[in-house]
Length: 344
Image (tube, rainbow, N blue to C red; front, side, top):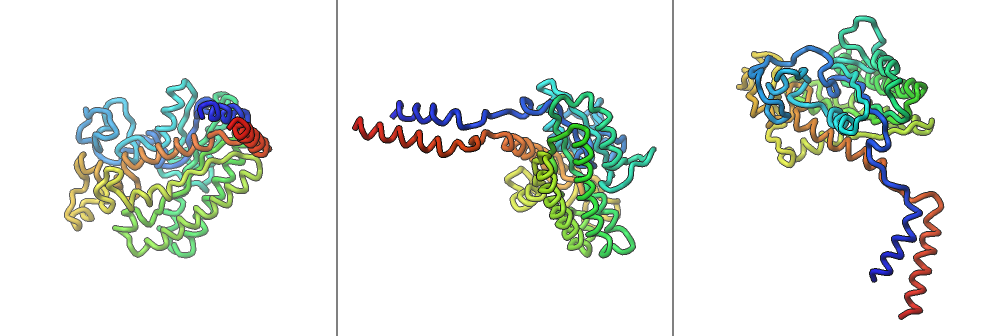
């Protein structure tokens, strides 16, 4: 039996592409997007520090990232792209993050914009092309703020779906722009269900259906755009943030979470009081609650998104049978089987 298995391995080996790790394949990593990717680019604190000397830890609670040397995130820990960047940093690869909280996908590049959108960010990235190496990987997650703005407009029903589709198209335009700058590989994430966030599920339930519909419109258009980009020759790795958040919402205990309804940081003291809460929760509660504020997930959710992102990228690099090899492999296995019968 041992000889037989060894023979199979020898026959199969030439027909499988060599497995490759993340940093063996890609020479650098770059992030574009909004607050879900912002690693501290905007000096706009989401909350007041209560323990500025807190230890640096994703699981220490809301004050941890106000420890000296840490820029504030729109959460109580690292954003998901920072887990990817850490793998590149450990391998000595270049990384960069141009994401800004509040950024929109479809807004024009305006000088002095405090929350520059995708058009501005992609030009910043293009300006850093000397640091790409031969095969950079670019992450893009953006579009929620386009939808939020439309939902807050005078006619949200007329505007929300169009804004969602426009944002998804802006992502595709950015991929094409960067493709012309030498970027062939992208990690593009869809949006989580905005209707499931406290902003709509708790604070504006009347707009929840429209928020979810706009999310679905964005994700459908993005999926169609990704298929087109791949047909045009770009390599796009899909990241399903929508499905992952739904998994957490369905089984929060599996992820160490206890509350998927209340945020840690409320819009104001009055809203918090109506629900019998403090305006800002305790450190311990900030880890237990899925949502850090009305729209942003907490550190544990980001950690899970980061893990799924790394797994998704590695799966895309997994070895696959080489073209035309299967018939040869089957022929080889048949020959081995015939030999065993003759020896029996």
